[in-house]
Image 1: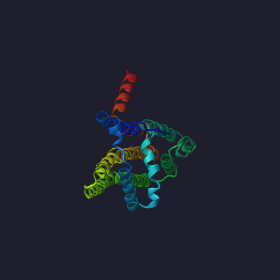
Image 2: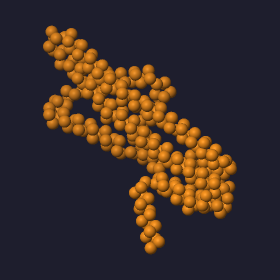
Image 3: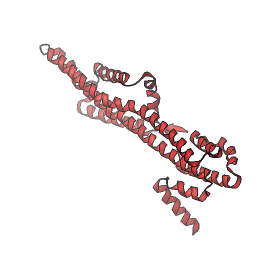
Image 4: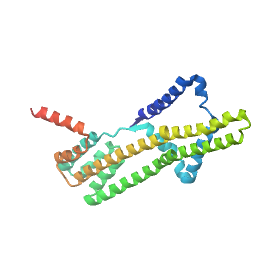
Length: 267
C-alpha cells in the first residue's frame, strides 16, 4: 500500500522557507518581492522544458509527472514479512508438495513473488528461475533509470539556463546604459535567472532524482531477497534453512533484536 512520503515535501518546504527567511530578514517584504521576476522564471523553466523536449522522446516526457510522483509516495516493503511468507510457504511445500502452493497465491499481492512461485510450481530449474527473474529485475532497473534521467538532466540544464538568462540580462543592461530606468529590470533578469536555475536544480530536480534512485535500489534489493526465497522453495530446502538464509538480508538492527529475542526464549 502506497502512502505519502512526507520527507520529500517537508524537505522542499524547509529549503524554500530558509531562502524566504534569509531574504525577508535582510530586506523585509520589499526584499522578498524583489526576488520575484516573471521573465527570469520563464527563461529558466521554458529553457529547461525545451532542452528536455530535445533530449527525450514525447512518450517518455509524458511520464515525467508520474515518475516524479513516486518521490512523494512511500510503498511499504517489509523484508521481515517476505521472509516470514517464504518460511510459511517452504513448510507447506515440504508437507504437501509444491502444487499445494497454488492455493496460497490468492493471498499474495506482489506480482514478482507470484511469478517466482508459479515458476517453482511448474518445476523450472533453479538456474532458469534465477535467470528469468533477474532479467525482469534488469528490465525494472532500466525502466527506472530512464524515468529518473529526466530529472537528472533537468537538474543539469537548470543552472545552465540560469547562466543564459544572466547573459541576456547583461547584454540588455549594457545596451541601455544611457537609460537609467531600464537598468534595474535588466539587472534583475541578469541575477535572478541564475538564482532560479540553482534553486530548481538543487532543491527540486536533483533531490527528486536522488530519492528515486534510493527507492529503485531498495526495490531491487527486495526482489533479490524474493529470488533467494523462490530458489529455496523450488529446491525443497528446510524452512529453518530458508529463514536463516533470508534473514541475512534484514537490517542489522532488526537482526540483532531478533537474536536477543531468541536468546530470551531459549533461556
